[in-house]
Image 1 (cartoon, rainbow, N blue to C red):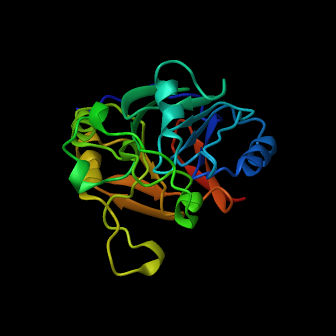
Image 2 (image 1 turned 90 degrees about the vertical axis):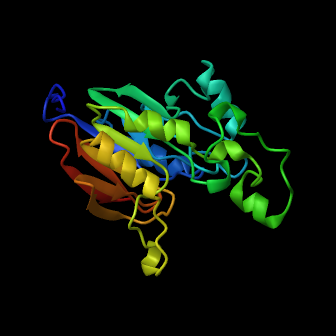
Length: 242
């Protein structure tokens, strides 16, 4: 049986941001607009194309996307965060964010790397100075961008989770109305086992609001389009245009 989480004051809200992709001025403007919001979460892809991070004015808790500076994230795991107010949550948990217990499953799904241990995912061999790599920020060969089976199994075993943050989408997900389902079944399996109170994801830069495996599952816009405010006790959400 799922134990109920302690209920925080209903007037408390926590902000939720989609992919940032280096749009740090936009995040600063959002946080200034909501100076009363003490905590924020993000579904990944925080870094700029140059691999830079920033120091938000309010604490921001984020998971990895697929276009990060993974050496920076590796240092953050060992106690060297990119900024005092920027808190990286590695896959697993539970992580404590205010009154919430948060589970993280950042990164993308790659079948060829899925059975690798997290520690064995190889880093980039070096930035490739092509138009494609400059757009992506990191060269595509950094396999630390993926999540793996061990992390999925650990998440499936977790209970009493308030918020699950993933970068990828669960199924069904048809970005921009396309016919190909871009969702990942393993995330549906996590939702079915974990039963968090709320699930947020990004990656596709498209707002969606659905129920999957009995869990409300919201895909967030890129931060330059919109963001969410979430009541910390009731989990009611308000979507605001940036």
